[in-house]
Image: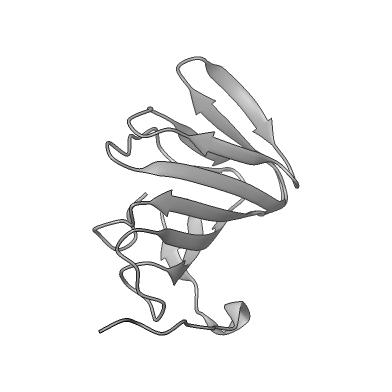
Length: 121
């Protein structure tokens, strides 16, 4: 049986606290809009918090900055992220995103396939 579309109001979805700030799953395995293939989140990187360096062995990730600033870092260096930036992180690339600034950095995070564990990095 096929699934019908899902429409949600982003502001009505609660944030969950994570090590680097807070996040809310809009589409994925652990929310109303179920998907095994796609994960879409709103994540807020809190000021002066760092998302530790990590790898998604089988997932690609896209980071779209809505407000604030952050830094994305890999073994090849650092790149500043600011509103309007879109960063693509290929699968199996060690990376970190962090916010050394004084304001929250709000981003849309898209991964494919979806996380198998809730609140995974």
